[in-house]
Image 1: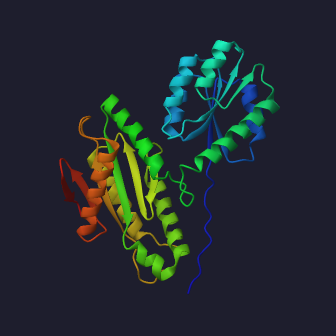
Image 2: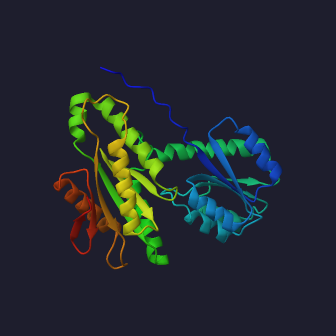
Image 3: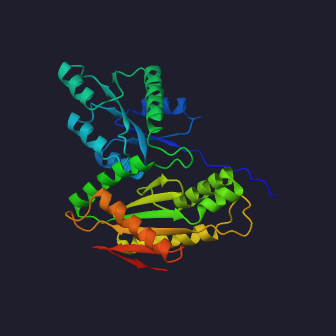
Length: 310
């Protein structure tokens, strides 16, 4: 029987957003971390900082308070699409009790005096990232690196609020691997885990940076699709279904085919959808896809109907 091939995965980069930092300080920090899997983004304007936050999963922000008000610090934390707000290091001249109290309320990781001592800033960055890494174990699935069920629900609440506030579309995919138990039973959990990892890689390659991936449990995945109509969500789901069916998997599993069933729900009106209703609707559509023979995409149509698309 063929053995499992060794897989070489791309490193998971940590994104750090530096707002208002002087070029000299920025250069020193980047040079100290150049061998590590960190990507530093520089922004000197609020618009650019928010754009970076929305397009990347930023884990740490380093902010020069001389450039921005305390209200901006509060606002920009809330712009993050992550279930956990990014850690925050603030550089400031203002050590008045009033300012310190406000910064503490923002739950900053550290506050450093200006002018900045580079070694102190570097050590502060290391500590902030280490603390965040310990915290993130509670919201990430260790096998795929995707958000877990708890985190998915928290992020979905945020996205529903955003869709409601700005009158935007929002869709949710629930994806389940067909007959996965038989794979585990016949070939073992190591093979099963490898297949799940490869499916996770397909999902990562199929979605946008602004989409949110979750391992909802076992062999079930969920994908939050902000600003996505039911039509576009359906096209994406069908592409994902085909890619997973056609993929040449690394482990040997005989003549078995790996397929998925996908259920889709969509946010419609503020009085109609909560995070639980959106998840339940997608789950009902997924159940309908399974009932119709699996390897299918099904959409949830309000109030309680489903439609098989393949």
